[in-house]
Image 1 (cartoon, rainbow, N blue to C red):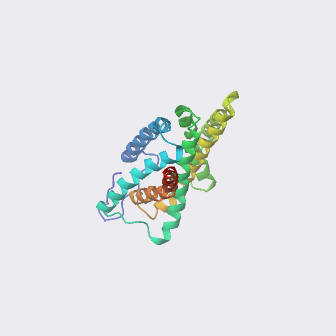
Image 2: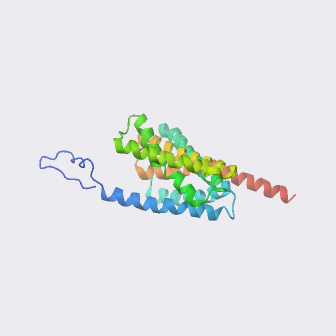
Image 3: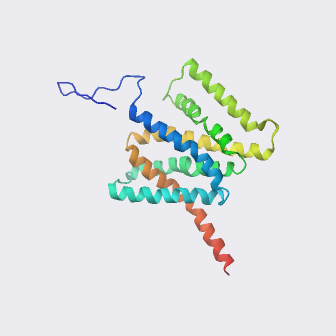
Length: 225
């Protein structure tokens, strides 16, 4: 985002409303690319691992990498007053989201899961609207209703098996978790840098997944007796 100072040394002028920030747009496109490919990756990973262990392995590796980076870059943890809010938001947006998605994708194809998750921006806009954070135009309302209607058709399965419907509902639950994560992190990002929040939120969301490591160790111990 370009910033300019006036000759009098005044604060930087805010960006014009409605204009795209190049860095934000680039980051968004990269996020969409990796996010879209994740569904096929999860589906493939479920062929070898259970839903819980798969989430643990993914975020275990990511936490180790980001934890090492945080030490090198000296990214401090959130202050004590924000530890609980960050942990709570992460429990919803990291732990719950990925567990629901993984369990749902046991019966839901990657393409279907990606379509259901595509409702997240709509749900985020509606929740932000309810909280007074966003405003929707008539076109926004129309697009939201069409998107929600399409997701409803997918969830119902149009006569397909109940297993599919149950899996689709789990994926829809993960979409709700992601929506809450995006909305609830906004006040936290006013007090933490985006990188600081991302690093420690991911690590905090990984901690509850360690239960699958404990379960695996217990099962291994029982087998060796």
